[in-house]
Amino acid sequence: MDTPKITVSAKINAPLEKVWDGYTNPSHIVNWNFADPSWHCPTAENDMKIGGTYKARMEAKDGSFGFDFIAIYTDIKEGKGFTYGFDGRTVEVQFNDLGNQTEVIVRFDPETENPVEMQRDGWQAILNNFKKYTETL
Image (cartoon, rainbow, N blue to C red; front, side, top):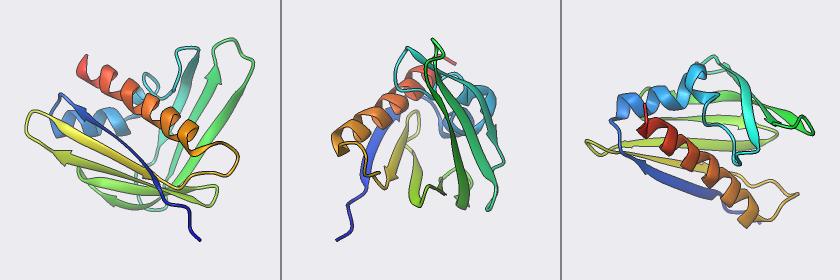
């Protein structure tokens, strides 16, 4: 039986164009792409085309642990959403233009090492960081 995808979402008080740029531009990604204040994202690269690579380095600020998140784009609809794959899993990111707000919905295949709730909470924390960062731009 397939495990259902995990979904997280946020409504950002900013127009779609600003939200899309904040989510996909490496100069912005490094400012929000971590789940906890004791972590950071020192580098990010984004070759946003089908077959292109998204790379983000995530590290504990104390240097005790870090990893590279690397994904390959499989579908892109400019300003509407994209899909990428990593480690045999798929992530879909959808952007809904609500006028002065933009809803971002992220659906992803869970991994098997950590509880679903922990995964959901971690990805939601990253999305909440994105919301906070983007609303202050």
